[in-house]
Amino acid sequence: MIFLIFYVLALLLAGVHLYFDQRQRTPRETARVFLLWFLVVTVGVGGFFAFLGHTVFATQTARSIGWPSGNPFQTEVAVANLAIAVLGILCYFVRGNFWTATVIVASVWPLGDAVVHIQQIIVAHNYAPNNAGIALYFGILIPLTLIVLLLISRPWQEAVGSAQARVR
Image (cartoon, rainbow, N blue to C red):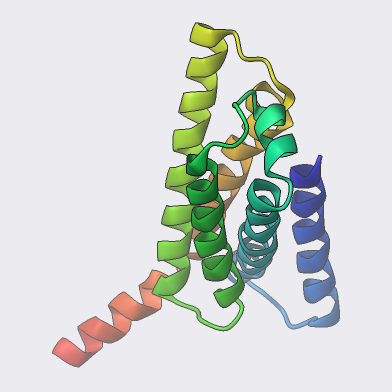
């Protein structure tokens, strides 16, 4: 459920941002605003909550995924979530290709996790709520949203264009 809350919150914050900053925007600039808030909220804040889930609420989180509790690998997952959360929060302050790198990391890991969750559903019949439920769906939806917004906004074009201008 928390995934849905962060997804909707990112949409709302982007909408408020666009409403109060009423400059005329191209679709590319609008996508950048949405990408900003998806990075900060779903990757940054969401990653921090995932970190908390795998540390403070480790036993409950493990059970909700169908994992045994007390596994030290869960702490490693927590630290990885924290690292990605830091990247997401930094996207508010750092722009350009940093966003591209953050989208790559914030997409590869959850999409890879989705493959493992699907494999666990098929092989181990693990239908635990956070293995087969909304976590799986948003583990696919959020990366796809980030990738689409990145492709529309293409923040790396300025970097490529300015690098080409320096070469000439």
